Length: 509
Image 1 (tube, rainbow, N blue to C red):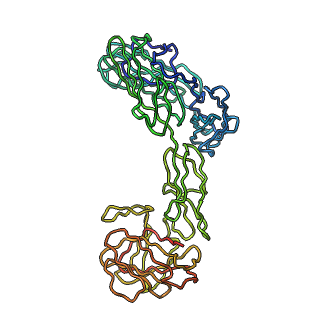
Image 2: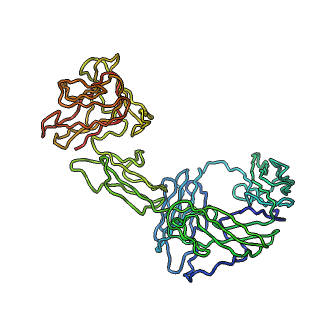
Image 3: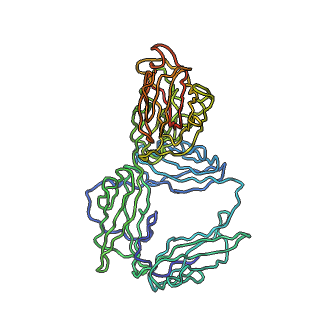
């Protein structure tokens, strides 16, 4: 195996683990605080085959700290028991989370492969990207693996730009400032494998490494920030090391300790001096924050769940149940889910309960061909968007096109899920868009009670409303227009003249 020969670049190479042999970086004296070790799974990414079991281990637990809960965000792919043992269930990816009695949390990734998948060889580089200075050489440390074991293989090497760097038998020679790609190829067991590494070449002979680039943390976690500097392959001690956070509301830094305060990306800047020169590097830390679940019903907010984090299983319910109304289904951020629970993503979400007699987007199942004014009518359910003149889209991402055909009056029937008791507060809401001389008639059986359109004549109807052409408009029609209070309705007729687009129909009671 080939080892590193010479210099690293002045490009910040961030790795996830601490660097052996790196001297501690002098830090400003912070306020004395208890030294809390970093908690993490000993293995943060693991591949398993279906049916395999893997026992996880945690490092960095404090005195008296123990795991109180293990969770899988996709139990259909991988499960984990109370002892931290992961079982691969089916092909896919899952995220495992451990929660301790001190409120600290950490993640690991599980990839589940099919047991009949073909083994393929692969080439792994110990460093990628590779950083060198102009004039330096670097021997790439690599291993060829097959079926989990290292094997001998002859590699063919090439560079995408030899003006920047050449490669000969795995040894990179840097000639010019810039970046290029080094490619290694081999054939093993009849299978060709290719691996690539980015080589960054700069004029500086200094290499900087930290342990926090692209690190993932949870709110409340505290970690130490470590900085290592090497000069021509030799670790050195920099002066005046300072860590700063671009957003202290997300990541608060005191001395060399970072505390995760809220969710989001935090840019961390490390400044130091060495050999009379000042250096500055910037990298990101991502924090899984506390998220909010807003629960709605009937267009109004029912309740709000706070403090939810990525991977939590959220069970949905209404605190303000509507008397006589059953929950038909749930939508999470506009997507219908099976059942009443979902796995929390790393963002705020809006969940909406659809009650009986509320449409769910594809409400054509509630339409039946009928005739009120003529024998002709067509309707078409369309998936996609339809914007109006104000560039406003439909709510559910779909709509129904009603066409009277050759501008003759025609209609269809909208059937309710169940009969609705008529009252002063009960109403039907229809969201429509029409243009020209189009009109929408609403009635029961053969009696027209309501009319809406761009131009509405003084017709003998109980309720009428003018709407602006080519604009999505919500019509709210009281049910006691159709029948007296105390009576029950099971359907209404929708008659059209011309072409009318319907986004949704919803009963309110």
